[in-house]
Image 1: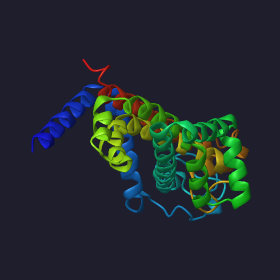
Image 2: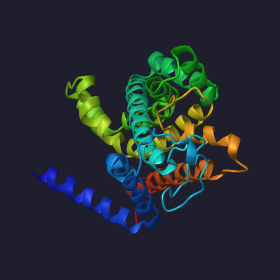
Image 3: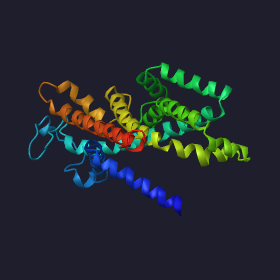
Image 4: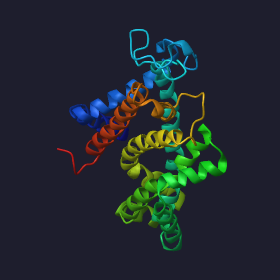
Length: 286
């Protein structure tokens, strides 16, 4: 009961610090709006995202089409709303994959050290030695362009960030007295890792998750823009940008609005990540 009360108190303090950070609140508001857009897309979208009407193709923003229409007469606002679903799925799915791989390998390498740590650090260095977009392009080119493959590709190329962070945290934690005491009392390695090591690396992992979601959304948009990501007729933000690049002079709204949405959403994840870092890091607290 005492531990639960302490945990609730610590969480309330973290939320209080987070609420005082205006930029973090702004980021959280942006992410909350994104989630609402995804959930309520069928109710908020004034038109079906795939509905074509060539009679109103390249129509500028108006009361009927607040973000205008594309070259096929599709409502851009509706497509952006439904595109938020793709962005959330990519952000959550890829972060889950990269987080699992990075946490497992980083924990094993940092805790056991020696040859195991050498293998893990080598894998991290090899992964980081290649440009992330190049790795993603190669992976998607081999497996084929689809939303599922994009999620897997992003998850695989970003795992090294988690691995390096978790490994460095575990290296410092494993030398702590309570870890040494648990080992001396006969506790098994698996028990020590689950009970004592992983709970102490949650805070930096949460911060990295927030930041990596923004990277994932950007990467998916770039892959779709290049034509190897989400495929038509799915309304990916990057795909909308790609369709509008040929109409920059006479219909710039096709690229302006989805580009602006990507910018705001990624900014929101970054601001929230910075706020979480300040709220969770004891050395940065007041």
